[in-house]
Structure formats: C-alpha cells, structure tokens
Image (cartoon, rainbow, N blue to C red; front, side, top):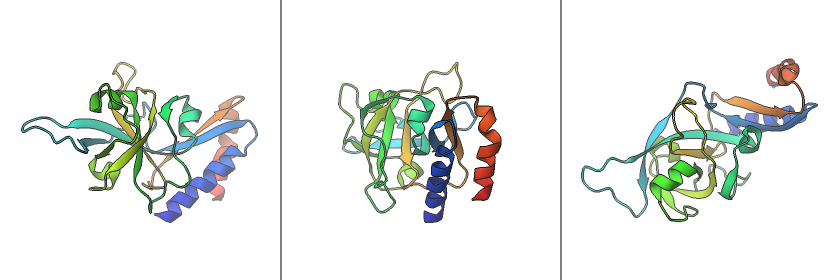
Length: 183
C-alpha cells in the first residue's frame, strides 16, 4: 500500500544521509539469503506450444539505488523512477539470463510479459532495463532468469535495506538501526 511505499522512501532518505553512506537500496530477498520466489512467465505474442514448459523466473521487488548499492550493472535501458507507481503501466527490469532465455538474439527493451503475482496478475509488464546476472541461490548455482519490480508498483511488507559505505559498515549498524526504529 501507499504507506509502505512512503515508509521505504523515507527510510532510504534517512539512511542515505548517514555519514559515510554512499548509496542505499531495498529488496525483499537479498542474494544468498535462502529465499526465492518464482513465477511462470507468459511472453506477450508468444503462446506456448502444447506441453511446452513455461519460462520460470525468480522475482524480486526493489527500491532506491539497489543495483548501484549492490554493484549490479545496468546493461541497457533505464532503472526505475519515482514515476513508476501503482497507477502507471507495470514495468520490470530483467537480468541477462532472463533476456537470453526469453528473447535470444532480440532486444528485450519494450517487450511485455505476465508473471502471475510478480506482475499484478493479468497486467502485462514492460521491460525497461536489463541488469547483470546475480547468483541469488548459491555461489555454486549459475545465475537464473530473474525479474525486478519497483517497490512503488509492488509494495512489500518485509524488506531488507542495503547500504554501501566508505568505511566499516558495522560502525554504522547501530545508527542505522536507530534510524529505522525512529520511523
């Protein structure tokens, strides 16, 4: 809901203002945290053949400068913006593994698909960006197709904040915890 979106935005701003913080981001499941949500993908204009297995993708909800904070490169297209809200056309950013699996040899920017709960049920989402692959499950498991949704369009209740700092991140842990508690 809108309260969750405002809470996350406010907290990202406060955490970003702490001394030594270079960037902040939010995600609902950090890489290697042991959690993964998946969705079956239906590509617009490409019906599956009878018996053909759907493309399966992990999905995450993010906010702030998550990709920058985590060192994940934006390969093509754009990141999410403040205008990507619940009242606008659903958008997604996909990783390179998703792009290769869904549209081999094609430009994914502007392509559309649905992914159940990950894209608000029947609403097709438009690909606006492609990011580098991340090993979310394990360092031993190759990167899987993944899609990212903006928190402004898919508010989550339980989230994790990531901070990139210039110094010892543990030195900021107490101050960051107090900023969260204050809100």
